[in-house]
Length: 118
Picture: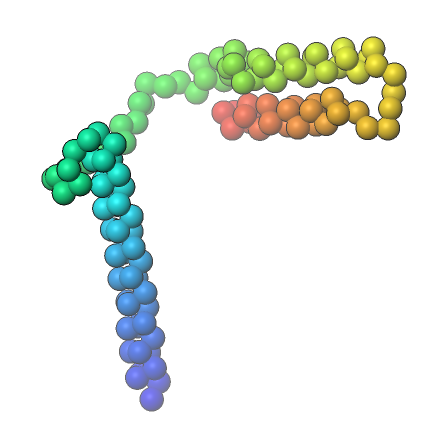
């Protein structure tokens, strides 16, 4: 009895995997059709897409770490934090300080970005 249950469960698992594969193939076919439509070709034109990702092994982690502080997002975040601090000093205290919220949001994002490369 348990062998029949195992066989049925295996068949269900196999059918689920086949269905997942077919769904993925459908997504690929739809993406190919969309690509062909974007470049003004017939939707049934043959197309072969290479999906090779070339990794640049010459990238040095130390050079990335040294240049992270020059990244435009990090520079902009640092400048915005500095501007917000200057504005907060000149402004009388109030219950809600919107620029304090920016500091709470921007600084952690900058630290996360920097931490990803460390």
